[in-house]
Image (cartoon, rainbow, N blue to C red; front, side, top):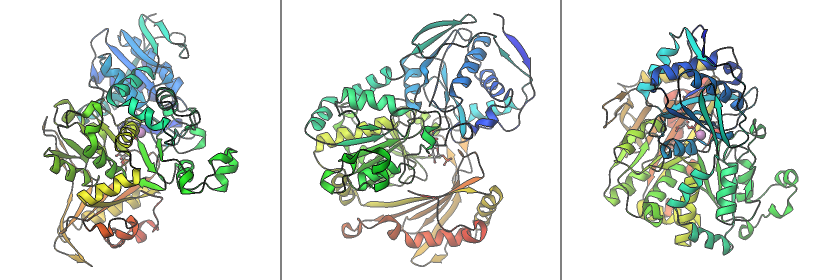
Length: 562
Ligand code: VG1
Ligand code: CO
């Protein structure tokens, strides 16, 4: 089977965003659109002949078709072997695990993460390097440049590979190994956490619920939580990955993971009738689960809930850092921690107490890779429900859930008590993110331009009890390779350390999403349990005033509040 060279014309919009190239499925279905991008990746990475690649995705619509195309292009480009998850499935952290474990040249992950799926939904593709992490900007920039100049791609003509059975197949001289997508990852988790202690906790009547949101983590959660940790069948809900995620929005937050929220906060009638499981309709506090968790489309995000209690992701990172020694894989201590700029400073306080460094990076996991590779940090986190460590080079939803279970098993306290004690010890970085989704792009860009026009005038100005100390556009110099990333979010920092950050999302596919991040510090234990929206009320109005939000977007209420 000889590779065929196909003439093509370049697309000019294949610029990877925060996490790979994300577009509507219908865009990826345009003739040569996916082919061009994959060829641009292969031209850029220039893997030596015979290299091994990992390919898998979150199971969304077009996953299978895309994998067949990628395999045929890989064969034509001289790869020797491709490891593919059975059924085309690999969660993002599992793909990272497999790339590292088998020391492959890199991997291609097919996912649009938390974006909805289905024929009218979103699709995505990204390249991860040999360390298992998302390609850094210098590679994604080169891929983009290459995509704009591409004149042809290479592909073999061959029948599709049967992805549903494990085994070894040959495709135009290249070996395709269809592997168990869960086993390697589950073994890695078992090596990091005290599974025996968690099993004992669950056996003792501790109740938990994991919502896989019909996305990729279903098979992982069933194997790990129900099988290896002995939780009763049914602990994992929505555990079958569906190409359209059951028409849901696989984003584990209080808005989109509503089924889990209803279980953890007191079930609603709607939930009862939809599920026809009256045993889950348990309004009293004492009968709700002790712990709830959800993950996103590709399994790299996590939401942690206690009984009627929400753990803010920024706090989750701090609590994990403070309690890391309770998990066997981290008993030897942490080298350092890192958080993205908009993530609250709660982790910084823990790092200071532990006497370890805390790094502040731009949004997106790709910025943590160098720090982890250099051994500078062990834990990393983002406010957007992303937490992880140097066990892989992606954020990892299931890992965070298991870390919490390990902490709960060792401390024997409730989720709520652990967080309250944490605040009492370190103070609370009261935090919230307001998302305004689906804004017209020009309105969103106009709003950002208006903010930028105030760089010079804002410092020193007083707004109620707050005085602006600094206003800038965050830029980052990577301490390892010296690369500079600019335009990473507008930060208004006040004299007392409170902050408002404005950013436009780099993962959406329709219009623009404005994210407003709000943070204030509360040291007074008597005020720490205040509702975050209430505590941040004044900052919220300042954010609206500075950005002329209502006038420019017609909106006053966020689409999602975290
Ligand atoms: C969002 C989050 C960011 C995260 C990224 C990818 O990006 O804010 O923290 O790394 O999604 O996560 P943006 O540019 O939309 O704010 V995932 O779970 O899509 O791989
Ligand atoms: Co994700």
